[in-house]
Image 1 (cartoon, rainbow, N blue to C red):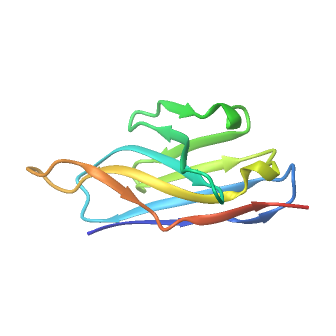
Image 2 (cartoon, rainbow, N blue to C red):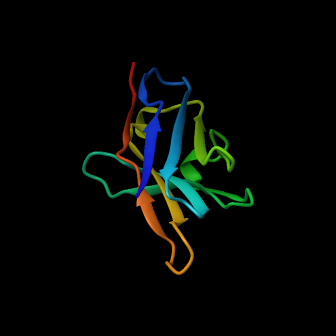
Length: 121
């Protein structure tokens, strides 16, 4: 089985920074795209940032210039550095990874349990 375990969320003041971590474990042959999504109360889950296995990145417009996604393929870990945080960044942040467990089985999406990020003075 595959698990994605997130950490690094918390309470921060506006303008502050947080770094989110997500480590994949279990039977894994290949990890393709990895990403971070978020869901605020009463809103749909949205893609925040994604990164390919080769390091190409994509960001939603509202976080460009403030957030940076990166990954360590050897550690099977994806990071999200969040700077200049705003109250509207408050949400539960979910890690996502597209993983192939073994040959003969197609890759599929896996999700972490979510970590709360609250931006409030």
